[in-house]
Picture 1 (cartoon, rainbow, N blue to C red):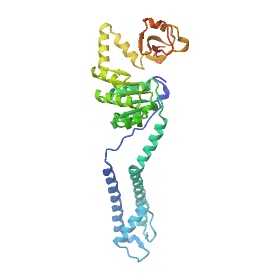
Picture 2 (cartoon, rainbow, N blue to C red):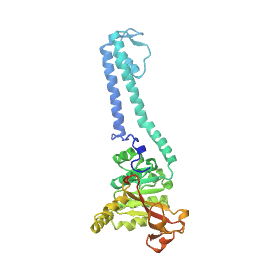
Picture 3 (cartoon, rainbow, N blue to C red):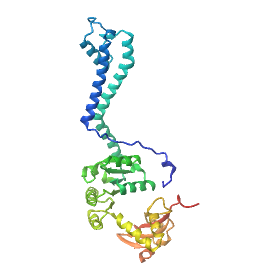
Length: 347
């Protein structure tokens, strides 16, 4: 499914945002609100105590009012003290009953937040982890990482096949809005990557914003998954070699790429535009990588019918379309081809 697919237009996701309040402050305001509500009910009961009747001694003391308030707010009472006047009964019906329900909701919400939510999160996480297989892990959702994830989705990747790891809740909210699986954590740590099932991933994208952090993530990923392809973004040319030494399969330097576009524009005004066209899913053409088909073995690269063949990767060697090796495709070759994007082609 490629750019402009109508099936993706109606997909919506709710944003998740963690509370900025610490646990003790969250608990304190809930308890304070409950005490305030009980105090209001207690005050009204005391002022209108003549509307109450004690079946034991026909006398309503402050202790009786306090007792009646607490059991009424938390339960429905025991029947030993009852409202008898119309005013008292109306107050119990239209004020105390909603307060009682609200207090119980606060109790249940507090219990969920402090005790059950972690269990629910663990259960949901276990379900997601169980379904993760042949997925993509994006370590970092900054400018480069977010653009890469959006581009993959535009090119037809199911967002449920993408796991985004980042330390920023705002960035994770953006990733969650796209439909991706998200995890707040440090991608340089073994346990974070293990929770993302890195050993079962088909690809890892690393764009942490700092070259040293990205290289450390790459080392950690390679330690946990020796064969997974790793693409890393580095901004310093000196770190490209270090990134490859760390185990990166593909090293991308956006600064160098920008320089190539600028230099190319000097040779012709449309070269940079065409390079950008190749790189984006919304362009009229795009680059595609695939394995050679059985019926293509022995034929020249120029004979393929799925696109315009431009390069061959054969046992670690790079073969251009004009080189001798391109005259006969071999089993196991990987072909880079330029394919027309029919969704953007003019009618």
